[in-house]
Image 1 (cartoon, helix red, strand yellow):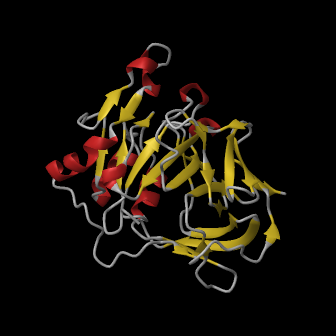
Image 2: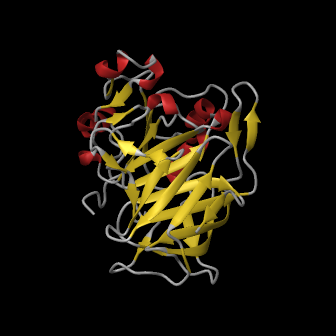
Image 3: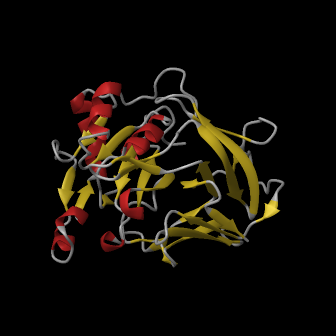
Length: 292
């Protein structure tokens, strides 16, 4: 709630094995995970309050579908680089507020510890403390656009929705990248594993955990640009699942246009409530998840 009325910031984060562990992502209010080229995944960490962003590492390049999901939250998009063929033209065409570390290093740096043992591409970090001042210096709007409402509805108190029991969910992004979520009854959160290992935040020394797991299914994820094997998918909507409080519920999702919000509804068309807390959103092909 501390970010109420302020624009969130969305940060692109590396998720390739060689770059792990990340730091700063435990603090994210919403964490997206979607496949990128070659079957790896990338993350987008959303922070509701621009004055409370930690240092985040490692920051990577833009992908157009992440940019458009960020617009669902009216977020400023923070990244390090962008492909020439899809993302760069889209930034211009849609006038998306973004800060690219390749051209504006004011809020980005290189992690000197990591430089000693990692490839350069895994070492860029965002200095969260510098973001508010830099947004002001650039003259970027820092308040939510007029008439914007949160895309999420929340229960007043912790609630177990009707649905099947679900203490474990696994999202298969490709043959070698998957995310598993194990329900912890004590914390009432789902603890995340990345390719079978605990997904840790280095700075917090904590395993990522979420009150809500939102799975958005799409019919097909395919290569849309052969120059860089960039993948894409239809973003208009589809079916999906909400997993929270040890329960699984079928949902539908839609997104109306480039700047449209993600809308989550149940099978009756009513808005879907989440439990208050951190939310993970994973995008997979139809049938790409298993539950137990």
